[in-house]
Image 1 (cartoon, rainbow, N blue to C red):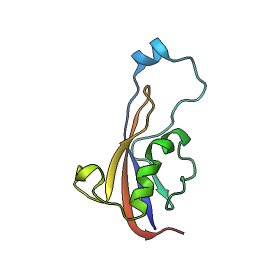
Image 2 (cartoon, rainbow, N blue to C red; image 1 turned 180 degrees about the horizontal axis):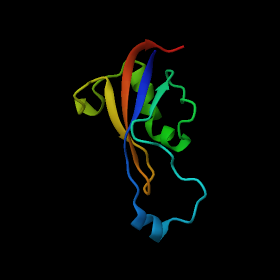
Image 3 (spheres, one colour; image 1 turned 135 degrees about the horizontal axis):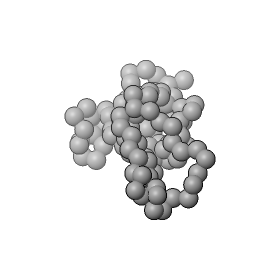
Image 4 (cartoon, rainbow, N blue to C red; image 1 turned 120 degrees about the vertical axis):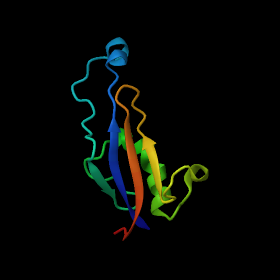
Length: 104
């Protein structure tokens, strides 16, 4: 099983939707573009958003176990995937890349 690099590629914030539909919250997403996390195989990286992990974990698991060409090969690098979290107010796009480093 391999480690998987997770890079925050893009963040968005839909203030119009937030204003219309979201209840005020104390802590919103704090992901920053360029931020990098390393998943040790299937394990969620420390400080990685639990909600975002629910969106990306199946893809991390597949890549960690040698999966390639996910969804019929839509990525130029067959050992990668571009996945977004499911937050409709503040979606974040993550680039997942299998590494050659063995998981612990």
